[in-house]
Amino acid sequence: MKKLRNYGMVMISMLILLGSCFTAAATSISDGTSDVWHWAQSLSGTGWSWQGNVGNKPNIDITEVSYSVNDNKITLKLEVAGSIQTSEKVGYYLWYNSTDTVYMLSYMNGDGAGFGMKGVMNVTSADNVTVSGDTLSVVLDVLGDTSKVEL
Image (cartoon, rainbow, N blue to C red; front, side):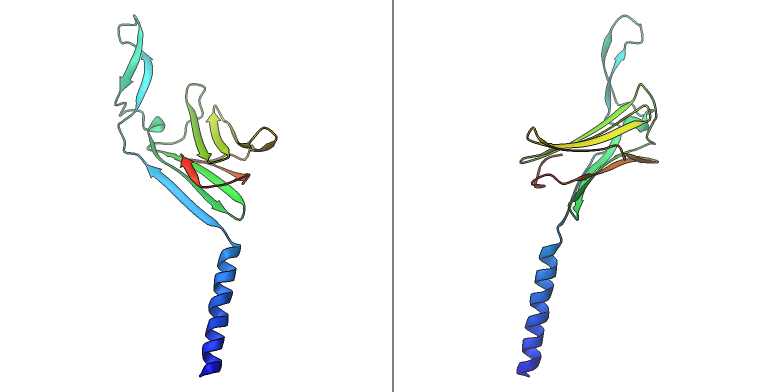
């Protein structure tokens, strides 16, 4: 019986040790639809103003932003109610600020980029932005603390 109990303790210790070798974290923020405001020329053409509730433009209505961290890589994602547009008139941006690092995803007119910056000299960048239907994503190297401060 003592041997079995010792074996169980060794197995639990190994699982704890293995679990501490891998870091994984994920956070997302969901957003409802029909809450978009955009800067547009008035219907009379006399001036510009903010116009709200653009239900006919689901491609700019963000429904979720998220990040996940696995194996020293951070993945940023942005999802919209419609589909991601390749247009010079539509741009998508996502910022993730941790306690010591800023990460960003951007996409406009078919060009996407991601970057991370910790201080002045520690920078990571990527042009591997993936577009899949309603989702944009990019994978970057983790530079610092990934405790979420602002997404």
